[in-house]
Amino acid sequence: MGMYDSVVHVCDCGHTVEWQSKDGPRELDTYPTGAVPFRVAEDVLGRTERCEGCDSVWTLERAYPPPINTVPLWARKGPS
Ligand SMILES: [Zn+2]
Image (cartoon, rainbow, N blue to C red):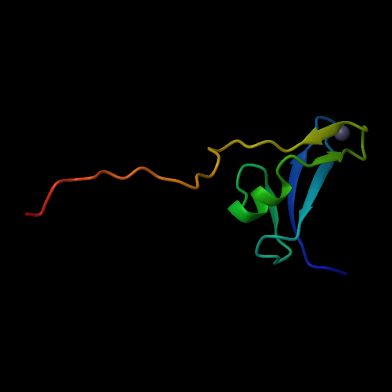
């Protein structure tokens, strides 16, 4: 059995829906959708899971700014 971290969301019906990630710290931790380690979040992003209680489908979407690969710099004259 592999190690994984889980993101959980309580469905409208009360059942807990779970997404499993193999990319985070992999400490078998469970995180609510409101506080997910960044690597785990990026791994489960966009994935859908079906609620076993009521058959609803849930998709995890980004609730934080997308990560940036480039940042701005100022070119300042000097020192002279
Ligand atoms: Zn449900």
